[in-house]
Image 1 (cartoon, rainbow, N blue to C red):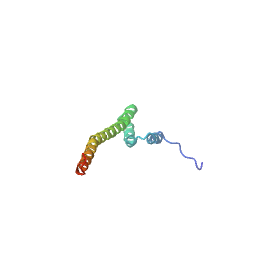
Image 2: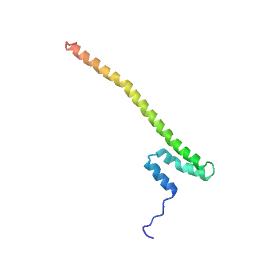
Image 3: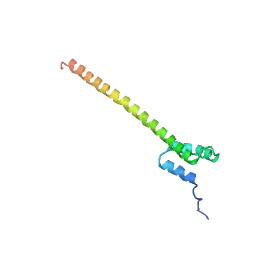
Image 4: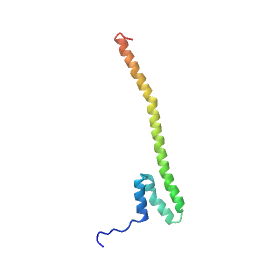
Amino acid sequence: MRGETLPDTPIERIRRHLVALRMPRALETLDHLVQQIERGQIGTIEAIEMLLAEELTVRESRRIKAALQMARLALSHPLILMRGALSNKRIGFARGGF
C-alpha cells in the first residue's frame, strides 16, 4: 500500500487538460461551474459551453488588443521614418548638399 497514490478524480484530470491546453480562464471558471452543476442550476452541456465561451472571450479580447497595438505601431512607423528623412534633409541642407 505504500507509495500508491489515489487515482485522479475527473475534475483533477480536467484541470490538467486545461493547463496543458493553456486555457487559464477556463481553469479559473471550472470550480464555479462544477458548483452550479452540483446545485442543479445548469446542465453539463451548458457548463461545457460556458467554459469554452469564457476562454474564447479572453482569447478574442487578447487578439483584438494585439491588433489595435499593431495598428498603432503601423500608423506611427511611417511618421517616424518621415521624421528621420526630414532630419537627414536638414542636415544635408546645412552642409551645403540638397
